[in-house]
Image (cartoon, rainbow over all chains, first blue to last red; front, side):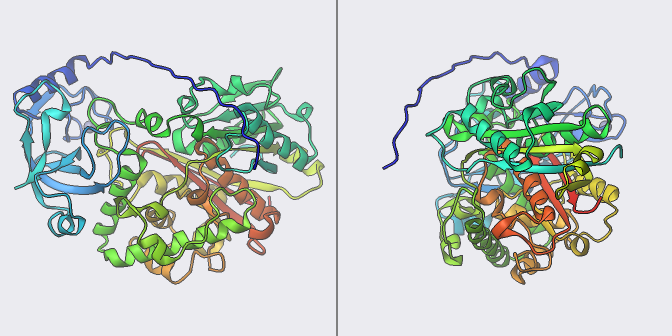
Length: 153
Length: 388
Ligand SMILES: [Zn+2]
């Protein structure tokens, strides 16, 4: 047997207070009212969701607010079957990129509203391009999890 | 490009779970080996650049200061380069820029990680956007599975074929690792083992994923004039490329990964490479996930879009194939993240120097090395060759 050497058990706990700023504060106020807001870039014409203070490609302020559709199409998905640090739900769950109707980027959230226990059944239902719609929590606090998930239409 | 730059030697730790050694001593293990390999000493070094994935991984900030002694950096200019998973290639780029610019003749580059000392999952969670995206990513497997799913469906690749090809890659790399004295995972796996392994994030199973490794890698870069004085094989830097994308996952297309395409193109243009599959002799692709490795083959122009599973199954990228990829066993078998990209550079350099030992690809003259980072956000490439 190789000799075992000592280890030092230590811990760092760091609380943070992250600023939303005006644009993201407004976005999350919208979530409380079951609204999803984006902003439109006047230069490239893209509607960005969640709302941004500036267009990452054109580097101009995006001041034009739009309430975007609560329906969209699935762009990509991943069936997550293991417990990972900080995830809000127990596995299995589905992480999904969704192109909300009328917008120009993909929105990351959960795909739910179906039985997830059997992967083969899930594979029979879930496919890219399928129509999804937002499902909201009863109690909303102005957080991304005010949206429970996106479910098949 | 500026002045010519060459890699003159490399040193790697034995990678694995290294709880028997302190982090500074682990770094020193690689540094001592690169000095032994080259016959150089700390006196010959003009500057030191090092990096980790994020410092938080081991709970000690500014690791380049922590390792100032282990890297013999006292009294010298010292830099840290940190670009998440692509850190190792970015460290190599930094050393290259430093010498190519004429500001140094000899630079020590060191990448390191001791993932088993901390909570790697919690650390990696902090890479993700905190207000909108952190809750849904489920770490690297979640992101890369989504990307692979997007790619496979776009090109209509049947699930059975992609599963078969990914299993082929896993078997091939795990077998290759036995010929690499520094590799972490040394296990024999069969196609059925891979296909029946525990499901992590569909379609990724346990044997499609890299391990959690501790390790360090040190590489010495030199100007043409100094390198030639050593009278030993040199791996000349022929091209470097690096590209990034927007921060939000969903703002840019990952099915054809533009930063991977762009980084490779920049490096190919500098190296004068027109047909990478024909001209390259070997590639060390950053491959923590089997499925994603195939996407890289396509983004790097090794084959057409959607074609990689067919070629994988024909053995084109095997050690005996037309363009061997990851004959070291790759990231799939060894992943101390902050070191991993530099290990890719080191392995590519060993190949073109003819010094890769039991995993040498006979006659290799031109090699690609690569790493990627962030939530599918960045890619870096370095191409090295035996001829200046
Ligand atoms: Zn714009």
